[in-house]
Length: 418
Image (cartoon, one colour):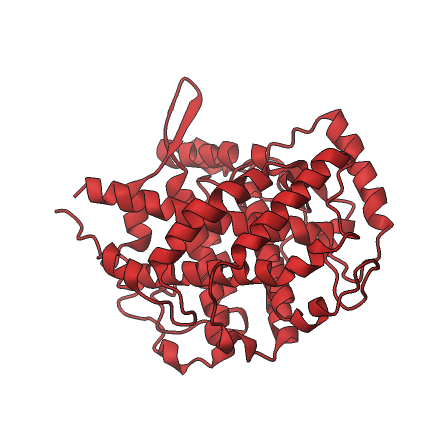
């Protein structure tokens, strides 16, 4: 039987709960204004290289992911599978090894440039220290060589990571459909509290995490391994997987809510970009890679994106009332540590980047007064962004912009499949 498609037309006309914006307007704004420019920006040298520590051990439990991947400190594919000749499970495991591995290819020219970048960054005044930046195990990764897509990472390990994130300090609304054990039918044993029982801060926090989860799931659905012939994988949209994650029947009504939370997160990060524009408009701030002409062109493109963000009308009065910046910062620091428990290098890479990007966006929104008081020609002790935060912020927003674009493509595919 054909799965009933929920009314996208109704979804498009809906206003988001915390913003005077309808989804159809956001779609058009993203498609014609933001997405082409943010995609171009992500291809620039300043934004394509991200420094990350993928070797930090999980601080919460002994990682025993469904399948491990090479170049990662987790258990290898279990030998008993080979002994038992469990072909299907072994193939899944070996596929995850290959798809989840990081492509660490870097030219000698790039490596020399990174040393120059480090010298330049060290000469700047910074007031925010990030563990990954200073760790001896941190390495630059070319994001264009390591796109976010399906890797085969699944099962108990992946479920435990997301469950821990949602349960961070009990910020999860207990009406959300999530079985207590992903491998055992729960027979109705779900959390019983309603979403409305959460205070404003917890509600906002949950919606941000839910939106991030929806965005990542959309990337996996849009870049799914469809087939592999002659050793060459073919990637593309998987409608069945999309329905499994977002169809209201299969998700017990949660699918549309997840997508609304994606739009909420998109607007939060868009709002952050509009608020941080004065920081980058100062002549003292440059996007240094050593190529003066390209650096100037990259900054011009970035400022152009900031100008576009001002065209979207916001009404985040509820968010402005939040007075718990330190608590939110602690939550995201904990989530970053949970990302060290992801048993897949590529998944860990993009999880850490997008978490840091969202954390940076919140840092900006909680620092509006400091940004307004920035001096034009000298560093400020009140508000600073590191290279790492800037790269994470724009790439994380780029991922959300891509998710909105991918959702438009799935709408078309679903209409044609009816």
